[in-house]
Length: 144
Image 1 (cartoon, rainbow, N blue to C red):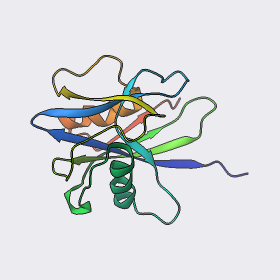
Image 2: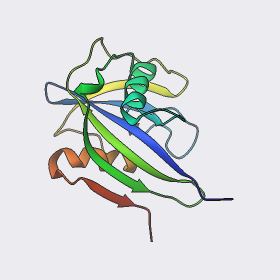
Image 3: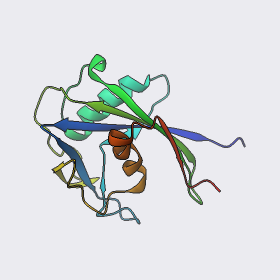
Image 4: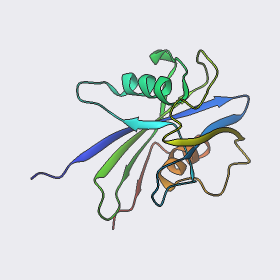
C-alpha cells in the first residue's frame, strides 16, 4: 500500500488583533488543548472550498473564498500517524458570529490577543500561528 499524505486546511480568523481558537475535545493527547478551526480536504474539493466549508461547519461563519489568504504551509508527521500537509489560511472578514457548531469535537471557542496566546496550543496549529509574525512560507515538524 502506498503511504498516504493527508491535506488539512487551518483557519486563522482574526478580528481586532485577536485570534479565534477552539479547545479540542478528542479523548487523546490533544484533548483540552487549543487549536485552530481546521479539517481535512475532501476528494474533489479545492483547498479554499475546504476552508470555507470547515469555517461554516466548525464555527458557523461564511467566508468568501477571495477573502482567504494562504500564509503558511507545514509538512508534519508523527509516529503512527499519516504525514500531513497543512495549509494555513488567514481571514479578516466573514459573515456571522463564531459559535461552537461541533460540541462533540470542541469544548469551547475563545478569542486570544495575538500577543497573549495560551501555552497549550497544539504544535501543528502553532506552526501557522507563528507564521503571522515570521512570514515564513513553509515549515516541517516531526521529521527526522
